[in-house]
Image 1 (cartoon, rainbow, N blue to C red):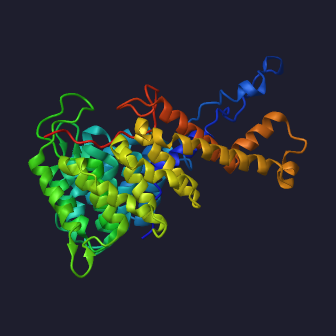
Image 2 (spheres, rainbow, N blue to C red; image 1 turned 135 degrees about the vertical axis):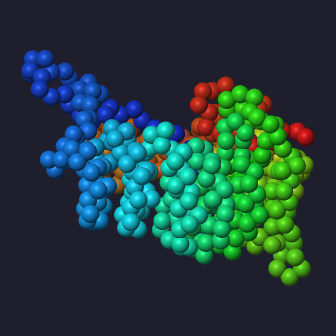
Image 3 (cartoon, rainbow, N blue to C red; image 1 turned 180 degrees about the vertical axis):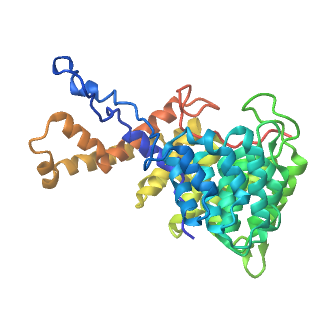
Length: 452
């Protein structure tokens, strides 16, 4: 199974590449004597204006064709033109698109209606009705149909506002023979199965853990496990304030934890029930997330870091590093097992190791000595690169600032900066505060559980 590249891993590179380049553009229609310097003009491009006419027809003309023309091909083409009118199309089109979701007789054009409604968006007043209609499409559509998949995708775009659709999402659509439909349902539940006031939807959690997390398709299982981690344990009461989770309902959380234990059972003939190494890691992550006692044990972290040995494939190794990143300081007990990966032959592993060490915050300090050696390693490689003929040929006759920009884009310098940033991040860290008090710290907080 192909490994996913975690966003947290790639974030380190983005930090070293960020620049403050001016926006391209130039002011027009100014007399020459009043023209500003070009480098200032670029910061003030003319504001873009959405068209009011397309093909000599206004928005309402296209909307009429999209919803009333007897020719389905014309309706389809008109629907696809509506987004070109920009944000103002939402108010004018919302209710008409909503009505067309069920009134459109052509199944292909009906898909276009759903797609365009998702692209343009709907007015808040129309959302409840739209969510109900889309949920019905999920429930009633033919197995393996594109209609069901598009409806699922659109519901996901509405996020928690579509929580009322959970009942239909976890219904018999989960038995759809198309694995991609089941995978999309698991992904959608991660977005819609959450309420800001009451927390994760328990029915969504149970369906993910009991059905989708043991699907015969590994891609579906992966999506379900990651959805469980994203949603987190159910709450026993309402949120005490905006953005603050409520107390954990350990009784309901136990059901999910037990399903993960079922996946980690060792059989006499086939070993662990969850035979995919990457998915085994995610089962352990979910178990630690939904059971405080399992979080406090070292067993799961030790099992996860076994994927760092020389015989492990790239996928499990990367997933294991992402797991450590998710648990932040709690994973600090494994720092010595991460350090050797700083000199791994796969550069993506090195970047993932840096992300894990950053997430550990102050617990990553034992790695500082090797990190400084690693920075020197990349600095030396950069100096060697600058001595090569092809580099000298490229910088020939270039200005100093151009040469600096070119150097900053070299892989060796990007890696050196990634290591340097990690060193600083760890040194600035405080207990419970990876990166210290710095604004916009990039390390994700560990998914610690509230005490029982």
